[in-house]
Length: 275
Image (cartoon, rainbow, N blue to C red; front, side, top):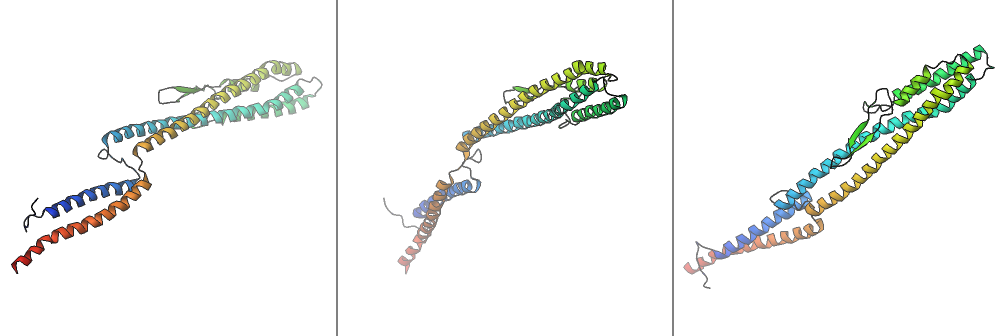
């Protein structure tokens, strides 16, 4: 191919300029990957991968929301368990006072003292119930309702069952008549027995339900980790590779700039022909 000696058209400079522009574009891309840590940071990088990544990010947000709901439900359940456990811990003392009150040999003064102690214990049990509230929800208070919470993105739910019977039975034993040994024996056989039964039932039910919430939360954490890892495989940049490429492109940029400078000086050589 004939070489054109012209001060108007410089093919070598055009070639060098195209090469430099190409290197600069690659350098911009690599620098963006290094600075963001992403090989796909927008639709212009890779439209399909970016669309997939956005869908996965939405899924991760959904998992986070479900996990937050489960954590809130666990708080409600754990506080309710604490309240019922407090009542359960008082049962032995309450039973002891009732047994003493069922003794026909005690004096009236002793009965009054024992009944006062009994009332204090029952009042403490009522306080445990009243204070077993989390985020405005109390599963063991009067009129409590069950709590349902989302357990996955498919719409599944887990429940915490209301245990208002605990409060009802504490109220029943608080108003029981203990004026004599016979009444005390009746309270042991009826009100106390019922209270003991509902407390044990509540502990078993709430314990199983909170355990299910814990297991589901742990499962969602594993799902989230796996999903985030998959997202990283799609959009994360290999920084070791990009660092090496960045160094290479910077060298190429310098060489290309020098080449363009040499090409631009070529028309200067034509001036010698006119001296």
